[in-house]
Image (cartoon, rainbow, N blue to C red; front, side, top):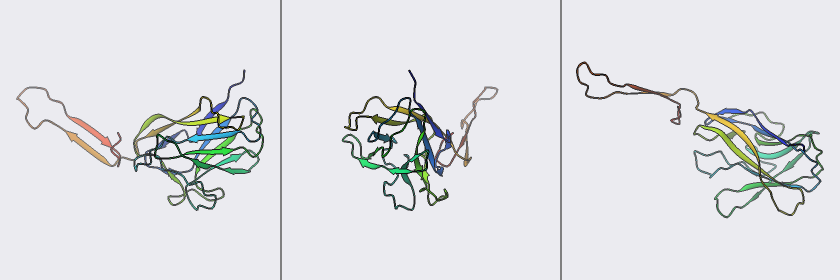
Length: 190
């Protein structure tokens, strides 16, 4: 049985970085026209979380859309979730996708524009090894989603901003003591 492939471009980002992030999904079986895709960023909408993208096709910055291999695009719409303040994103495939043909979920600068501080999407501000993003599929198009396909991305600490030295204020003569040096980015990540 063939398996689907999920990967992110880039696979490693820095905390607080602004850019365009691509989630490439290659299905292991054919997906018919009308297949529902639901993408979950796992963000809670807090300032420290992944920035919430816009579903408006005319937005000048921070969009989420689906990009096909032939260059066509499809746009997501928001789906409210009862147990969360932020939405998930759902899209119906406007064309069939054959097994082995990749489709890309783009989060960031709108299609045809350059990524910059003003057009991109901001990464969460805390470092996180193997940060998971979920993609749910429903080939029937009726909203019956199965287990998610999982994309993993590493979020590393950003550029060095602070150096903190912790040393005891009182030490005894000829006794050992520890000095701790902590290197942090602007968000407090090591």
